[in-house]
Image 1 (tube, rainbow, N blue to C red):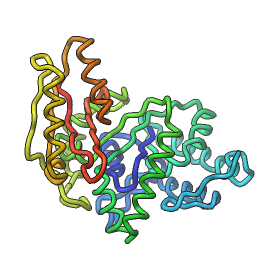
Image 2 (cartoon, rainbow, N blue to C red):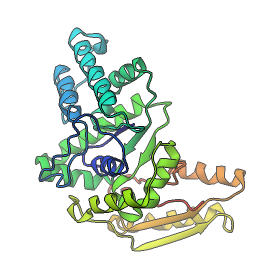
Image 3 (cartoon, rainbow, N blue to C red):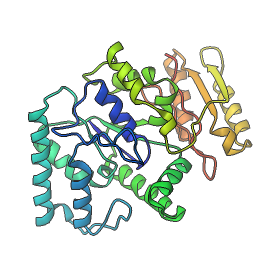
Length: 312
């Protein structure tokens, strides 16, 4: 499984949770903590180093992506690094052959064509989770860690979104609001992701205690969002207009309030009505996944504010 997304978006929290549920992170997983990730980064020991090396070879870095030359993937230097990538994955799979193997690094957004080639050669069809987060919180966290300007960070976010959209088109990707979901109801959140991706892993009582011990959200590099209001809409009893009215009213509220808003939806059993609800959510960038996650973004300073599991 590939865990990708934005830097500082919760990829480590998600990968760490799966690790304590029994997933493999390779031969020598990079668990070493530092001040920016006090609980550890939870990634393959070679992943970020090799991916950064590939980007450097292409004249870029994780925070400064430049347009790649035409047919870049077939250059001699990239082919050599691709062979190294393939060897690393094979070594991980041989040394720690667990049912679920995870490679986690946001740089894969940019380098997905190389991973696609290698995984195809290894006859692997990866599951993909794209970790999302409130953009303002990403900016705050990167600025705190790297001391970049807000303009530079916004450019990084824009580049990663562009390449993810380009490379992952027509692929099944689960968009995960990892930090919010894990802090709200971690067991439900993980179970829904596991069901949605049909992962060969489960949330047992013993393993979940390890996850709970690992998830310490006091260490997060941003303020914790605690819902101040929970709006419940049961579409078996109410019409779609009730959601439209709610969203319309919330547009006038300050972004700080919106960050604390939670929408709990019970989807209609009727297929036609369910389609209407999903279509409307899609129009406002709130496409629900099978795992029941809703992520809605508004333009400007009003960022992602709705994140809740759909009752089924």
